[in-house]
Length: 279
Image 1 (cartoon, rainbow, N blue to C red):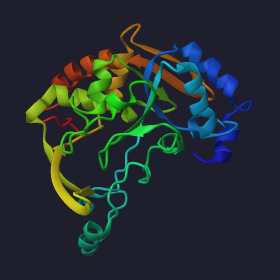
Image 2: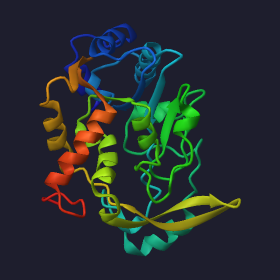
Image 3: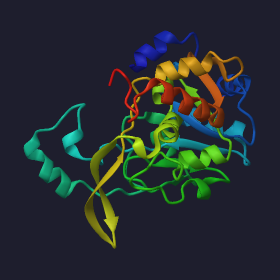
């Protein structure tokens, strides 16, 4: 969505004050631990852009709260798997040989929006150490949440998602649907465990002071049915609070309840390897 589209969707500029009021009405509280997924353009025309959104979130959470956002960098992956767009097969060896290694401070995010990209550089924010599936965190629980993230299981119980579950975090969707709800990948892991299909991939990482291309396998993470899962969860009274945030829709929920429901739902609606019927 372009900036012109955001202006057209907005009756008035979205400000720090209006965002703060909308987020408070949604139920976000001081001291919360919140995993936030965002689309800036879906919120309408925000005066100050990503900076204003992050400032509003931090103001509500306060010094006792912890803000978490994905800092995914999917381009640091096996080039033979790329689809949007694919690259010629004859390029694959050169990509594996020359792609810069993952760097917590320098590697940009990809495909997750301007707000998350700004947040990974926020003063004091910490980032977990995974080449494709890192998380950025600011707040008292940052060190705990960005601790070692398994290369071959980046969204499972040993990941920031699993630690958020232990801490009874909230999930906040701002202008995005459940197809962006990363916590549902933890539900996949809970539902299928060692039976989940694996993807063969690789990434450039630093090992012993040297850049290396490391091949590894990780559970195949799919989102084809996440919108249906999310709709089923929202149909349960009291599980998801929905309301306007700017010109968009906000959804606030408890991550633990979401993951528990999601694991049961996926076990009923997917095959034994974790593939949706349509995949």
